[in-house]
Image (cartoon, rainbow, N blue to C red; front, side, top):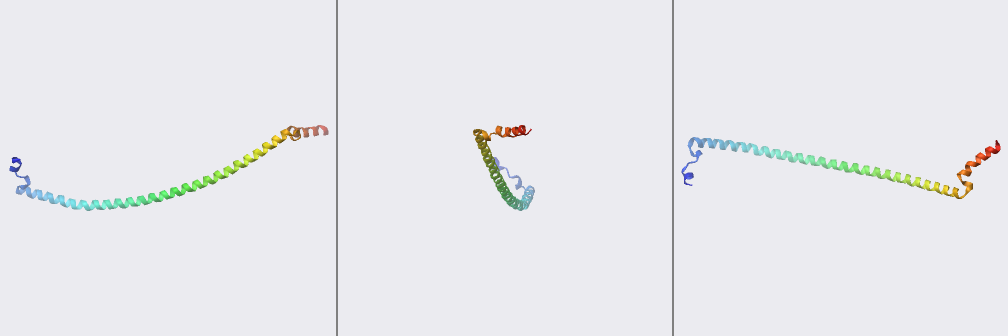
Length: 125
């Protein structure tokens, strides 16, 4: 500790002291320039963030709207197709009941219906 106390600081010499004060003033001046520039940059970035978040919000609304529109369209198509399927099933079940009835009554069977015109042709011919 005695050595440190015994050695004078380099900027305590008059020629170096002037240089030290000059450098100190330049650093202070640079700091005074940089601080407002960074404040301005921070403000600009905050404004940009707000603008981009607003755009993002609008895009999100548009996407939600399109998704709802598409969901509505698909829902309508599903209902329509479901109706078609039910109609086909109803027709097929009606057709099957006719086939079952025709199999039970030989007079209405497909074979009897096909033979009748052939017999008529044979009789006429």
